[in-house]
Length: 304
Image (cartoon, rainbow, N blue to C red; front, side, top):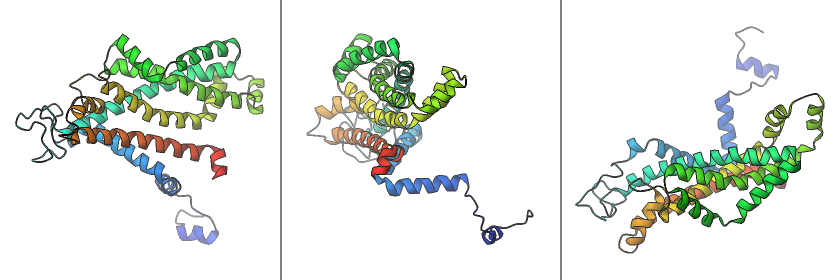
């Protein structure tokens, strides 16, 4: 077969050409959109949120802390599409910059909680014995406290701030992920292929990295996706209580707490706009997590 062979020649020979990488990605995206429309809608919202957070300096019509003394609590007009707050700051610009706070806190806190969950869930679940018993009692004690009460207590001890918030949310959120990862490891620990790999002389670190972690990737992705919505909601709740990212940083929870409550009746957009933003983001992550569970879990695929 020469280099001049065309696609028609392949068709005549009965040889199907494999589509390129971009074509396969587009086909899989279309398949996911048809089978999981809510999950696809959630993914679109998340992508738009990330683009808004990344391009906020270029997309925002005003600086988030720019004060207009003649536009105090004004409705949307004269360039302020969503109105202004009690300091004359543009609400749309603060919503865009608030997306940066939510994305930064959400992804960094979930990344930290995932790393911690691997150490306190995967390793004890794999080795078992006294290590598993001690670590799981610590996880039980951490999960025994009501989540919001524990977060408020830790923020009161360490003080408000983005760094403290990321560390606290990451540590507290690792308990639930550790339970999920440990149960997944217990399900595959006694499989024959792991015993065969160990019998061939593979080290424990190689078994964990090459065989255990890839096999729990599906529940790990589902846990991470669902946790993102919970972390963003927790950050908004702490900011609403005045324990999150301190002003004048743009935070959806701060916007609800300060102007949203104060002008809820006279200027309802100050409460509605950040409330809709929080609702959409949490809804998007939850729907994407549910859809990933349906796609990645073989039991859910069989049920469907």
